[in-house]
Image (tube, rainbow, N blue to C red):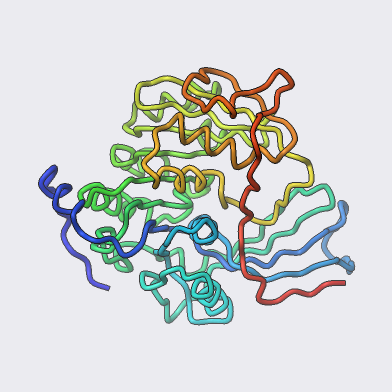
Length: 356
């Protein structure tokens, strides 16, 4: 694919872009991985053992791929920007995209290296272990991207920042800058920084980020801080307009969001223990992406996000609830009133499934 120079025309460029027709809603850029999911793996499984398991499944995964699938299930029109090989895993994932009507024109086809693959071992207690082959995504970067594609989107979302060294250090910044020049909303979700890219490695990316969604562990490691609201304000001071620190899996679980006025809003959620753990990095931030496409402000976004997950048993709110719809404010029993909606599940295609 070719690459256009970035426009820096400011308001004039954004005004022109806002009048152009958009052929899809969200461009999901980043991780697209073929997953082999094995479950349940015995607690004391070790090398040399032969054990029977209930299920071995092949499915598409990775933050950007999962985001695109969830958004398609919610009725949005997503496109995927990533890199795959023309092998069994890559063909399975492209078939899954096409089945859901997800635009795959911007998925670069790698002729030399296999599709990135992850073996997910899920133990009986739902703890996960990952065996990862980075494959062709190791080389995903500038040469794979036609930056004019952002002109066709309303929102550009990066899924898996800090997991793609070639992409993260230059192409990610360029992509978000092009997105802002085109008048798009921008969202960034992160992974743990295993490649030691660090904040220095992503330069001024946060200055082009409207919504930044790191997990607590990821955010604490990057900022050197421990208190969630302080962490959120730290990233806002680095340029991000809104910051959500995902706390799921820590204490009660939930999310701390800091809006563009610097005010912290905290949503504390308690999920049931049998929540499916097969997919990693799927929809924690993507529900906010879906709601933001409706042009809603942060308080309303939170209201609707709570409404979607209120079918789970318990949640409480901490912080200001003045902007929340009355039927979604916490009741005295710690539950939301109003009719709950089912939370959409991640929707990977199971191309191969072996059951005991």
